[in-house]
Length: 491
Length: 95
Image (cartoon, rainbow over all chains, first blue to last red; front, top):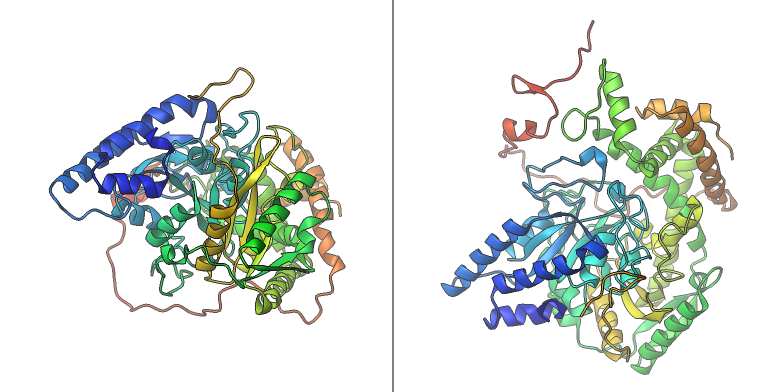
């Protein structure tokens, strides 16, 4: 089946003209027809535009014209990445009818590279959540168990790749929103260094933490997408002007002498015993290839989540002030301007967004600013310094991506438990570091993820280690059967 | 750490969020729990630690002071719920 191929494989087939862009796009659309009722990954599909773009690519190829490195490959974008002329909702009622007048830089780069947008994927509203249950529209289902969540906030993108609806997808990661769903759905998820990928056109949540990330079926595919979107962009002043290497060059499988740090704080309280066993097996695989692993301490790890729940809501309360019902989106009935703002925001935002705006406004208010906001920023310094000390001696830090596999929809009821989903992933956002989640086996039929954290701009190193592990893990290649009690059946 | 529904209503007012009585009550209860959890930060001594607002070392990013093409007015207005004479229309502000 065409849709089961990796991005690298389909690029190769397209280049050799063994298959046309139209055939690949039709196959992906047929796959969406087959599984989307069960998975519910997409908020919006762009079928007609996809087919006409495919026809253009085929015509160019036929005429011997230059086509981009991803020409003819179907993909999806998280619904907080602006796409010109294509509805972009952030899975919020407030932006239900918003049609961006411009493309995000990543959308533009992927378009120029010839990839074909099949649609926009579901997410937790404004990227606030870990399960897609905070989407104002519907909850996406985990392809490995339709009753479980796909993770979040980029759950739609992760599920779409896991279910072979697209060959790759983009998401955004503020605390783990790419890596946690990648782990839950059994795909590769990369959050690059803060500043590596332009955020221009990414609807902001917490600007000092947000970074666009990549979902792919394997590590090589991830390097291929990085080669296209990791570019300096003058339109994003936090985009770093640093040369981008060819990430494929790092995929040589050589980790001999590589120093791996295993922070003990990530293996205590609450970790699922089988998840822990899988991570230790992964460490053994890397050691067998000549890497050296040692236990270390990152003493401030446990303060990542509380610091995050001050900093991120504070930034969000300011960023989301733009949604006032005047320039775009939903507008409520009102007799005065103030009422227009209050009613629009009161009726347009869902509960989690309101909670975080209130929390952030509270933390930034004059009487709490020092005790909460400045305090959290100081803790952020300590977390960053923990990593700096570790990276003075080690090349990479290895942890689980999550403490347990995906949970059932509706199962996590209290907020702090839900927030703790990001416990292993949030410190890297606070420190701005690159990190990847790679599948490392299954627990009770659900995928588990291994997280590799690198030094700033060392995406090449983490891809190298991830690739070496993936090639030598000995794990069987599995696809979700998309079965649940009375659910749909695949194959 | 506890906040009550009056606190929540006041903060929501600052953030221009209309909440129902029931919402204010619910959020007060939930956010009290979250704030208690956040208070965990007080266990760390942060005397003499400088705050991190942003992880990049780059300071100001300058560009040439040139004009570029910007969004045409009609495109900028295309998503607006209400417009008039090429402008965003809102309820009367000055009585």
